[in-house]
Length: 81
Image (cartoon, rainbow, N blue to C red; front, side):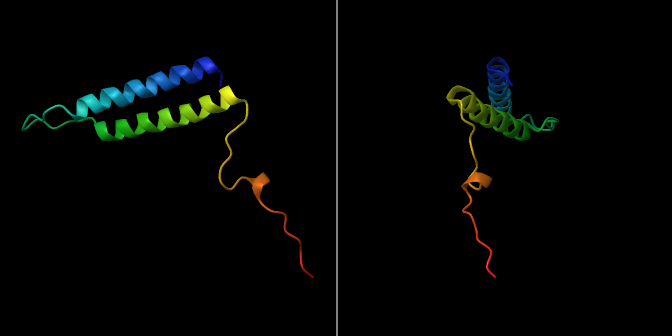
């Protein structure tokens, strides 16, 4: 993905999270249940924001983020016998 697409998805994730956060904090009207799971939408927005921030760091630094157990960081093992 390019930098432009990453920034657009980051802003969209922030907007989804902020909108769902606002809607979940509104007072509940008795007898009128909410049909939209606002907490789940907050979670989805937060996951998108975290992933896009990690991708943004990768794009700006030029080196990919590696996990804790990346294949290149495992020690070489010698076979016995």
